[in-house]
Length: 411
Image (cartoon, rainbow, N blue to C red; front, side):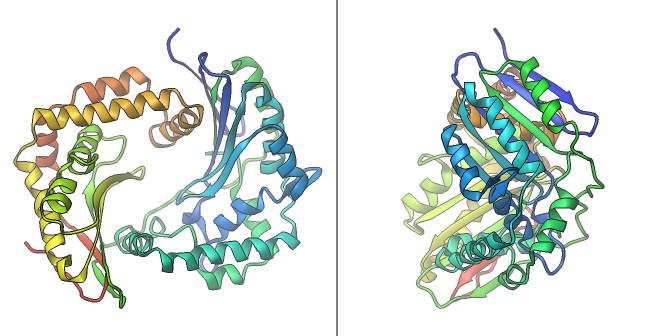
């Protein structure tokens, strides 16, 4: 039997997606709610992350410990986090535990206790997360790059600011929950060995009465990306850069992913070979494609010593620009093999599939079939990648460095 993806929209706007996977005995549930850090109000940066943690500190008739025990008794491997736009909650378990798992998550999302006594420990954890960036220079430079490259509010870091988190009150957290945790624009994605009609009936029963709200859209503000050097008296220089690409819904998306793979797809990729192996310039180098609904970017990183930092940047950017001169059949074949491997592994993982179908609906308003994705991968050729790079060359590079000495981008 082929791929089985179902979709149903409740009257309150909540979208239910489900993919039946006959070959597994597990199930994964992914809740995608537009309540991410982009919606954090001024003076409350980090409240989305605090709320995501607070939601599981007691719900319905269960206090925090009882809720954790109920999930553990079902064998749920769970997670909750706030991204830039969306808050994600969910978990995976044996398929026979799907309905009781949904019952618990209905309490978490619709009836969270948000207890005042839990706020202080959640604040402490959030502040520790922020402070840990000082011990992770790579993480810090990437956060600083995002702040300068993307427009507000897409440039917010999910961790927020310590002073804002310290000033949060339980009333503020509860008000944020009331405003943003709403069904319209929210998605529930389920993947695994499921029965569609039973699943749909339970979702309608549990979430049909969830009242919609006035959920705002993310509206990027006018912005000009900027480069900056951040001084740090350290033995290493952290290099982060970004330049425009295409978003996931663009016809060139897979060509952009192929370009990423040629540059940074493993130990035989160009950046690893040319920058690290041949010249020994740095211990880490790579690029990755990143997408929002309306824009895509290539994000790059390198870490090296101060005496080799400028050369590392020069050689890395040279390799990026050189890509437009041509890629080989062997390189494209390697990239296609990697993309297909990822597709096959995702096909075998309920968690990956639940996340993927939720992401497809969020970005595209539909769920792509395996055949569609495989067809796009099969269509990749050196000529297609070259045509993409002609239309979208390396340009308008924003550079953020962290270390002793500033670097410059050569023409």
